[in-house]
Length: 219
Image 1: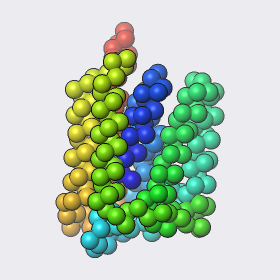
Image 2: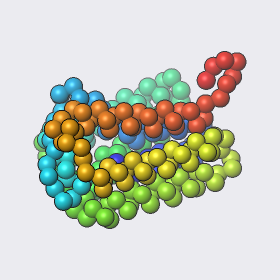
Image 3: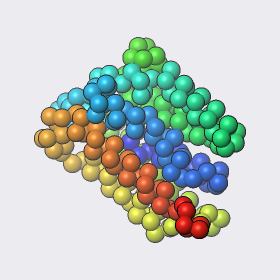
Image 4: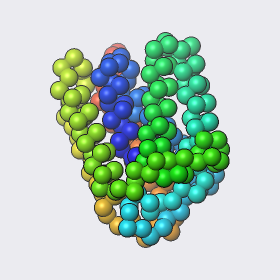
């Protein structure tokens, strides 16, 4: 999944209101953020391949650290222990669950190339074999979760900015799937990773600004 993971963080925000949305965003997308950073550094590998199915254009060659279940569990444990110590146990549990949700959801959509340990014992149900179904699922999940959070009167946040965030996510994902990938990005997986990393970080910043408020000059 691409933006579909954000639906999990939006749903968690409805249930666990004190946890900032940007932290929930970071938890559910941690694996992709790490992957894009490692690809840009040349540690993990992808390559572009001509394919009628847009979900298979960027092929995962080696994502041993960012997308293995072993490291996902390890990172989730670290997040849980860190937030338990410095905040509270509930925050740790929720953010760790958000982090784990990424691998579990990806295991439904990726096709037999999601590793359990480093880059061995790969699994994947392969729902990406049905591109229009996969595209529709992500659009529907983000739209529905966004709608219910937008309508929640018990939460105080910048609603116009939140609406702009949801629409920008939907537009970004639609462009990613249906627009031809620029030749410069086809030739450079590192550039592709940097573009995606920058986009996801922009979503993080907007999520932070949604709940930003001044309190004696601090946020």
